[in-house]
Amino acid sequence: MEPERTGSTVDPAVAPPVHAGEPKMVARVRERREDFQQRGRLYRGAFVVAGFVLLLGGIAMLALPGPAFVVIPIGLAILSLQFAWAETLLERSLVEADKAKRKAQETTPRQRVLSAFAVACGVGAFIALAILYDIPLVPYI
Image 1 (tube, helix red, strand yellow):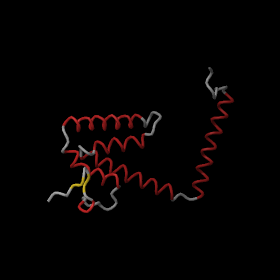
Image 2: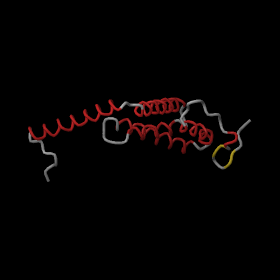
Image 3: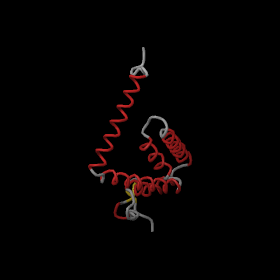
Image 4: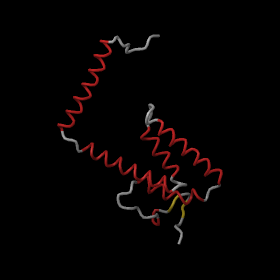
């Protein structure tokens, strides 16, 4: 039996079941996968190309400046409409991000003070080196 459709989304009353602990983004991608598969090859091909461009750009941003931890999940979400491996990676990365967020929220005051002290030492070391080795902090014009 196929779910009833309203517009281009699945009717919430007959939506696919959400697995325990599954991120909302993965559930939304699963809901939209069937509609996506009914689109033309050119449309799906454009999405796959866009997904790979975003994914590769996000991977490059791990070493370069940029919001890699935002771009990579977007690329994986686009690719997961077509590929099961991308859905698996997306779900795993979102679950790990949730764990990291919870772990960061559960830090003790001592850990926070030590982290702030380490950052202050790093900034102080940078300033000391800039003064000692006459490193210009503002580029010359």
